[in-house]
Each structure stands twice: as structure tokens, then as C-alpha cells.
Figure 1: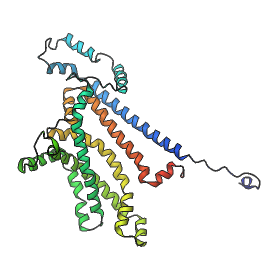
Figure 2 (figure 1 turned 90 degrees about the vertical axis):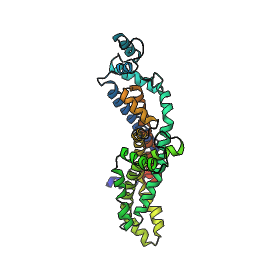
Figure 3 (figure 1 turned 180 degrees about the vertical axis):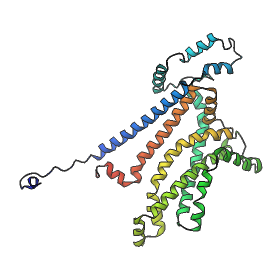
Figure 4 (figure 1 turned 90 degrees about the horizontal axis):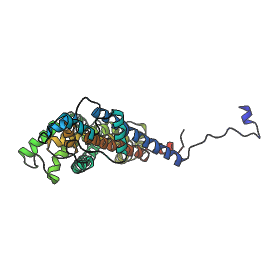
Length: 341
């Protein structure tokens, strides 16, 4: 230490700080790496579950098409297995399917004989519209309910509304859909019961899909708002004479958003999964019903493609949330910029 402080000799070199651009680029690369790992893991697990199980999709396919000539003779079975590559070792099929997937080739449906992208393109618009409508209902409704619930902690409204999300979240999705059908379709006749098109046919399925999501988001945001209101800086802002609406909306709500945004990223994937039950209950054609049918008929290429699509959407939503964190929290921006070790 004395040597370092001797006049005329240089002191210890200051610690290097990462350049903001380099740190941000490393952060983006790391997040994109996580994205690739998640998608590859989903592909591998889905492939093993679909192709390693002791089942014979070709025999099932021939059983469903039993009217054709040749029936299900052993020769025809072997010819179709060779056509779809099911007669080769599992590792070879895994590598080949992964290589075709990277080039955009999703294969051919076992049941319909059509290219899988064509099958998905026919079913996707209905599901996208349903998921978008459900999120358009759930996000603003959950934010409004949470803000109203936590506006005055400990009040009568807070005690009433704080238990509503848990009540709604405990309702099974299929039962909620049937309840909405019974009330709004069969009794009030405000909406078609099954297979409706346009806004009237979309309203009930979107509401059935949105209510459980709204309950989960509201519960998380209410808890986060209540915790932030107990923080010391809120009392400091009150002592400075700032009006409560400004403290609540500009400081409390903004600091409470991080858990909410995190759950929104997870919810996007959950909404896609929820379409399976919702589209079945309301008899809507979409990816959900297509997935249920493909699982029942062991149409492995279609199931694998839908699983990959869900994984990509889920990972992309979480990547977007990760990139949004520095925007919401200045401390993360400073850390990525090298101002903190």
C-alpha cells in the first residue's frame, strides 16, 4: 500500500468498465442464445415423445383410410413406413428432421397428405384472432382491476376485490366456457353457441380464454402494487407534499410493473395452450382443435410443428420482455452500461 502511494509512482489502475454498446450486445447475444436453447429443447422433447413411443401412426392412418385398395397388408405398411422415413433409426430421423426444419421444411401430414405449412396456414388465422382478442381483453382489464384494488390499501373495495382473482382463477376453463354458453348463447341468445364467425362468434371464446388470464395477471399486479406502496420512498414522496394520484401512477405503478410484465411474457404461451380447450368447447376451427385431432390420430409432423410454433412464440415473447426490462428499470440500463460492477 505504501509503495502504491509513493510520490512519483502511478497508483493502481482504475477498474475497466465495459463499453455500453459492447455490454448491450453481449446481453442481446445471451438472450438470443437462451431463445435458441429453449426452441431446441422443445423440439428434442417433442420429437422423442412422438417418435420413440411404441405406436404405429402408419397403421392408424391406413385404418382410417380403410376404403382404399390394398387395405393394410404388411407390404403396404412397409411401403408407407419407408415413404415417411419411419423405417430408419431414431437418431438418423432426428438429425434429418432437424435439418429439414432449419430450412423451413415441416414435412407432410400423415393423415391428410398435405404439406404441414399448408395445414397450419389454414388453421392459424382463427387462433391468432382468438388469442389477440383474449389478450386485448385481459391486459387492460387486469391493469384496471389491479389499480382500482390497490388505490386505497386496506379499504372496503380492496378487501372485496383482492379475493376476486383467486376465485376466477380456480374455475376450470372448460366449465367457464360451458357457463358462458349457457348464459349468453342458450338463455340470452346474444352470441352463437358454436362455430360463429365475426365479432359475435369471437366474443364468448375470447372472454372464456381471457378471464383466467385476467385473474392471474390481476393477482400478481395487486401484490406488487401493495409491496411497492410499503416501500420507504413512498412515504418520502408523501412527506414532500406530492399528490397521491401522482405518486401512485408515476412512481408506485411504474415500479410494480416488472413482475406484471414478466407474467405477460409467460401468458402469451399460456394463451396458445388455452386455445385447445376453448376451440374444442366452442367448436371453432383453429390450431387448438387441429392439435387435439393430430394427437388423437398420431399425426407426428403436425404435432411437432405446432409444438415448435408454440415454443417460438413463447420464447420470442420472453425475449421481448427481457429486452423491455432496461426500459422499465433504469438500474438495469446503468448496469448494462458498465456503471455498476
